[in-house]
Image (cartoon, rainbow, N blue to C red; front, top):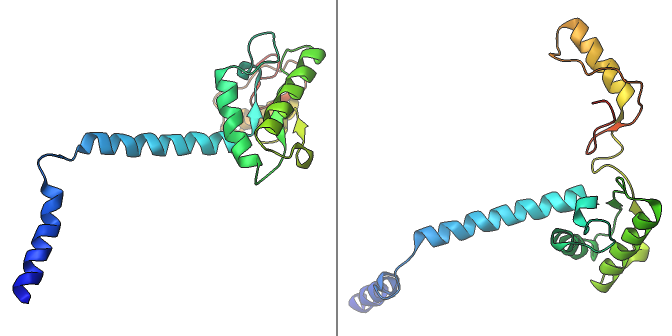
Length: 169
């Protein structure tokens, strides 16, 4: 009986040593790295929950390839976890921006998202940021105390600091 168990164990483990199906460690490792990168990108898109003007075909309300890809990732998340989605207006005129918002809502709806449970906003990915005038004061104070290396010029322009730099920076 012992002999049978030893032979069965040996035959079981020899199956992994079949020269007809060599293990390709490089391909296996590449798949792991790619999958990890994909998960990181997916997490970043969901965490940022923002579509920018570069997600649309220039001058139109149609999503480009990147816009479709990111919107699909957001849609898969919003099916179960609806929340705010930021669609940045950027320099788009108001009618174009409104058409982009409508196109995004239609895309999400077709993807199975209950758009009534979410809202579209025009906000920075991490919130509204900080008023640039306050940032300038903080940086100037740090420069005076020796903790900052540069101080941006004071322009008198009040905006937000975040994904889009205020005028004068």
